[in-house]
Length: 299
Image (tube, rainbow, N blue to C red; front, side, top):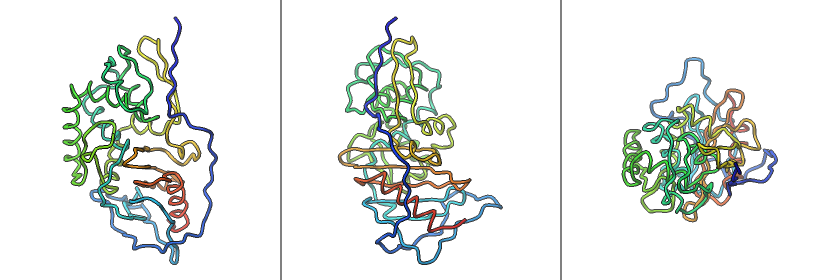
């Protein structure tokens, strides 16, 4: 049978790894040595040490947070408690709620309403059937909004009920400065979070082994259950493609939220989580932040 191929609009061009060491033009703000709540470092974990005289990278982001995941040490912060729209970073919570309440092998039949959403989309068709796992891949790799809507409807019965589940999960995680109004992260005054809360969301998300593997994937194909439709998925995370030490996590962009990026990097066992919010230069800001961290600290 003729196979209909649908390409994700999130396809990216080739990228080149460039991590220059730069002289920054802004003085280093106070860096907290506090640990993230409820994270217990192991006895043999070495805390990072800030090298004296280092200066911080210039950034256009409204909010920034960088954390050493092995110890919970805050490596850098800028307005980490500011409430901001978070665009598709919302899908981290969507994915966790779906994983909590649905089996990855369950089959979802796409409804016409699922396809009626502002895209980024993978081109799902009404009546098409995909597994929950394949829809999670479509939602998290190219950041597909139609997949987010389909998963929310399937898991919650309707979007309103699913959003309540998202906010219940946020309350369970103690996220006092986070609220969700839709599963895709579309602009809304009631869909927001902070870098501090997002660090907790990201760390919880990475405990789900399937989700962790998905966001570490640069690209793949997923098919409908009957094999009639193939969706080519290409990650929206440019840093994942250009740096083998980047192992996730998620991008986001809307007009209100601007560019947003959460990255996990594993450098010879040193695991760092970076978050930049509301910036027109999310990749450059993150590259510069990561480069600065590994010049400014020693472990």
